Amino acid sequence: MHCTITTFDYPADKRGEVEAFCRSIADKVKDLGPKTSVLVDFGAGKAANVALYASAAEAEAATLGAMALYEAAGKAGLLNPQSVDRRHGTVMFDYLG
Image 1: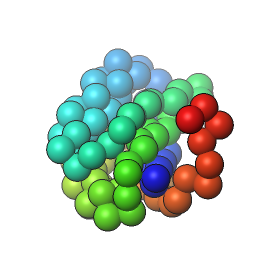
Image 2 (image 1 turned 135 degrees about the vertical axis):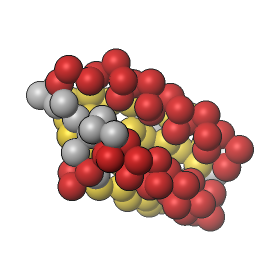
Image 3 (image 1 turned 180 degrees about the vertical axis):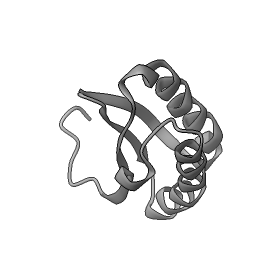
């Protein structure tokens, strides 16, 4: 299993719009096989979008599509484009599985 984690900064007054944006990403990459996707708010305008995939290929394909969406969100002023950091890696083990 693979996990993608995307951290980013967003304007505090745009939280609702950021939530809607992350939902739209989840909807768009659903066909690529994420098992689950969550938005984590760290407060102070920082957040992370986390998704689990069955394979590295699925995670990589979703990364390519999602980065274009993050780029568009940056241009629209929803988030700070310089702060977007997207990584993916192998899940070592699942505590809850």
